[in-house]
Length: 108
Image (cartoon, rainbow, N blue to C red):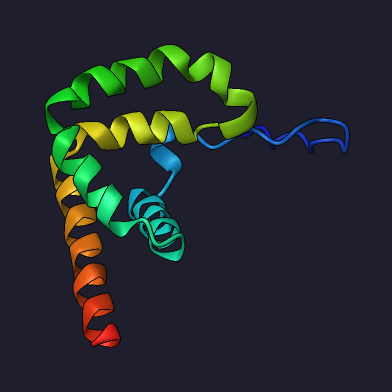
């Protein structure tokens, strides 16, 4: 069979596709960023309030993706696909609630 041609130094790497990005890793990074910035309560509130608007936000991300891609890359598509996944949103909510419970125990 034909061997893959070697990529020269001036050719950019191909960005990973939406399917190749690990969703759990992205959710863990999001939860970690929210916790490190001490924004757990606002994030939980936003997850609850924005639930009915999930589809609208998802479509807005798809529309804005070409504009945001230079800064955020494929993450915009990942976020849009995560909004489609009810289980992922519930896992995120549980992780944030657990962090809130652990934080209140540590402060007591």
